Length: 84
Image 1 (tube, rainbow, N blue to C red):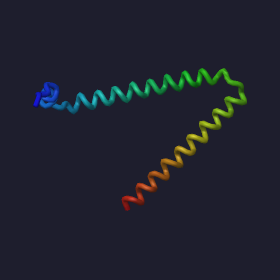
Image 2 (tube, helix red, strand yellow):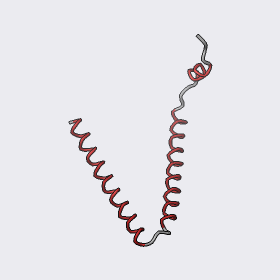
Image 3 (tube, rainbow, N blue to C red):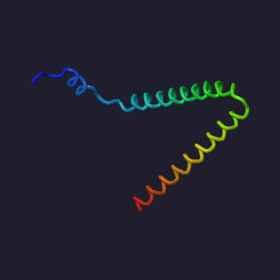
Image 4 (cartoon, rainbow, N blue to C red):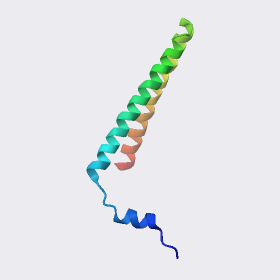
């Protein structure tokens, strides 16, 4: 059976909790920034829409937010029923 040098290196490597937490935090910050840039670009693209369409898009977003909130509440209630 052939040796896997990468596995040996991985086995020798010590897990650094602080470094892992910093990496996770940095990734979260980067993701938040990317989401903000996407949202800004989308809003800029939608600003060229007619007022009627802008109103429709705003209504769709509000509906999505309401449905998402209801979905999350239902999931939480279901999880509470499963536990208790």
